[in-house]
Amino acid sequence: MPHNTKYVFVTGGVTSSLGKGIISASLAKLLQSRGYSVTIQKLDPYINVDPGTLNPYEHGECYVTEDGAETDLDLGHYERFINLPTTQANNVTTGRIYQSVINKERKGEYLGKTVQVIPHITDEIKGRIKLLGTKHKYDVVITEIGGTVGDIESLPYIESVRQLKWDLGPTNSVFIHLTLVPYLAASGELKTKPTQHSVKVLLENGIQPDVLVLRTEKTLNDDLRRKVALFCNVEPEAVVESIDVKTIYEVPLLMLKEKLDLTVLKKLNLPAGNEPDLVSWNQFISKLKNPKSTIKVGLIGKYVELPDAYKSIVESVIHAGASNECKVELLTIHSETINDSNLEEKLGGLKGIIVAPGFGHRGIEGKISSAKYAREKGIPFLGICLGMQCAVIEFARNVLGLSDANSTEMARNTLNPVIDLMETQKGIIDKGGTMRLGAYNCTIKKGTKAAQAYHKTDIQERHRHRYEFNNAYLEQFEKNGMISTGINPDTNLVEIIEIPKHPWFVGVQFHPEYKSSVVNPHPLFVNFVKAALEFSK
Image 1 (cartoon, rainbow, N blue to C red):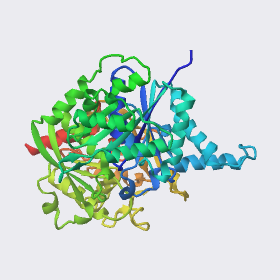
Image 2: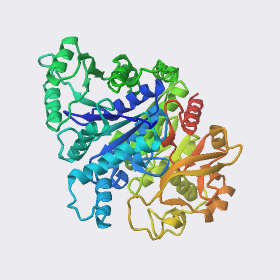
Image 3: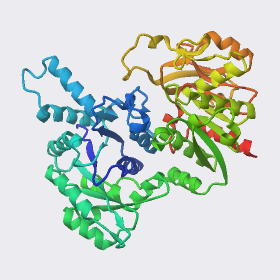
């Protein structure tokens, strides 16, 4: 008997940034807790092939999957909620779709046909949507369509899922439309007209939503729900309230209360399954909302004006804080404002310092100074990717006495390139998708801070970089107190550095934040926060 995958399509209206990704992840969590195998994918309407070349100010962080795909940050939310890895197939962009279609046309695969949006682009999109169901045999595939209904960029995706509705059959797909119900303080009213207009635009594109999720800052009364149901052609029980909450991790519990999962299962003609198993989730929420202590930790970066630029790090700290029953006040500090003369003013009072990843020379000296302050003051320190490289540069300058030590990324002609371009990266011209990406092995030395955190010596972590520790300097570093405690067994690339005489000073070339989830907070972040708590005593 063939496996019959069901599909849920999530669209957004009225305005962007309403939280389609969080609603998608919350629904996935609830279905998963009832015993269904679920995955989520994101369709992004921009023409970039992937977000890897986008400035963080443009699009927030670039999230990296196990198989080395540079993807939208919403995939991070998906993984943090359902605790399962995503892949290249979970993020589709317009750029990737058109690139594929044009490549096929060049090879003559369309047999001389005129290549058009319908059917060639839409068929390519439909193939990408169905791939997760046909290849991996998930029970339910949730597809989030980026942008807002009515955007010209999203039209091919809307048309594709309209066609899929009929291709799949009446009980094999559900459309969820997320809109805003604004509150007008002057009249003291919630207004449904924007939602009605948004659904009208969807109807004009041939899609009747099955479920409406209404973002609101005030509780929806029954009259308002009935009004929306009547004017938008949905059943009253399919009008779901999504009220503002203090933390995104409460949204699955809200959706459970609103019976979103049961409504979707009913429309997909699937049994309700088991009662939702959310014991560990509720334990996390309880710890998050009832901390026993509070500490201040600094996140030193150069994109701090946009919180989404470091989304995975922020969430990893939240997970680690809850694990330690501690509220971590994460202070984001722009590295360009930091120098050796104002370290006490900027960093004084912090119980832990994280130096964030990034690219380019802007703000680099502030990151180096922050690493120096943490090293000299004994403050728990976690350097991630470029943050680890900054710690290496600082140690070389101020302990080894190599005053001009630098990375060849910042100073191509430095006489002491303690950080250098990887051999495999030399000669590469194209920027997109060419870094060292995805999961690689790392062997950890026993008895180190990293080994204590992981409770094992063989790990896999995700990477996104071109530059590495220059092993020509390794002996000099280790003689003077900064040691390599994690290496890639295949290439001898230094993956982890530590200062054993420091209370907790760890730098990692990889990105641990990509693998932290609610159920499995990342051990490095957990131990970093634990060290910060001990330092605060």
